[in-house]
Length: 316
Ligand code: UDP
Ligand code: MG
Image (cartoon, rainbow, N blue to C red; front, top):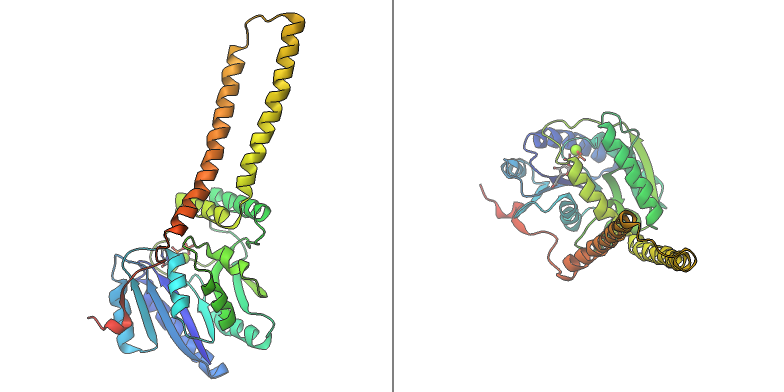
């Protein structure tokens, strides 16, 4: 039995040695308990620090280490895809390099998968959002509420990308070759039975998080546009609603003019209404644009990532 560790890394030179030590420790346990061999697949996502150097060093001393280095930063989703594509294991785990996804949970996760054959994935979520800025928590909660209302694909609140999957599950993920990859949705969309375990939020061991409020906001729009078309229907619903309101308004205005004459008044209210309608139209065009942009990037069929170097290159 071979277990693959898939680890996306972006500027993680400080975390990598600590992660590697921990991963070795866990793979020793896996070997003892399941006679499982391990392979470590690191994806350097166009890091600007010494991440690649660190990976070459690890490769030199341990040939279970493999790595793929991207030509630029393609994002964590692309990293995960590249990792899964190159993983050869019967079981594959995806986890962060910063030890926020504790590898120590892996033996327990693997045990569950091997003992419960009807499950094809063990996934993790965090128990609480403690230690996170209040506004971010609020928006995160709101996001999960909205997306689960709008999308038929269930997106688990607080789900992390830390997962242990069977080969079958991984192959299904790889069949989804879309360019705009929203992993949380993809993992759920492929189906299969997933077992959830939760754990407390852990601070990263070194380095900084790559997320800020704005990037998280973009990511949430990405998720909604990727896994729901309800906003498009919402635009036409809004249009029908406005037309109905306008129709009733016209009847009222005509009747009033016939019955009471028409003193020229109501300029401010007219401007307000014009602004409102104009705003709604732009908003709806914006929604359409969001989907159009997604379609545009998909039909170009650009590769999800581009490789600059791998462990086979043996560069110094
Ligand atoms: N990551 C990546 N490409 C990116 C951003 C992040 O491969 O463009 C990796 C990063 O090195 C880490 C994981 O994705 O292993 C999670 O990133 P981070 O810790 O910044 O996110 P957080 O844990 O704060 O959600
Ligand atoms: Mg992290």
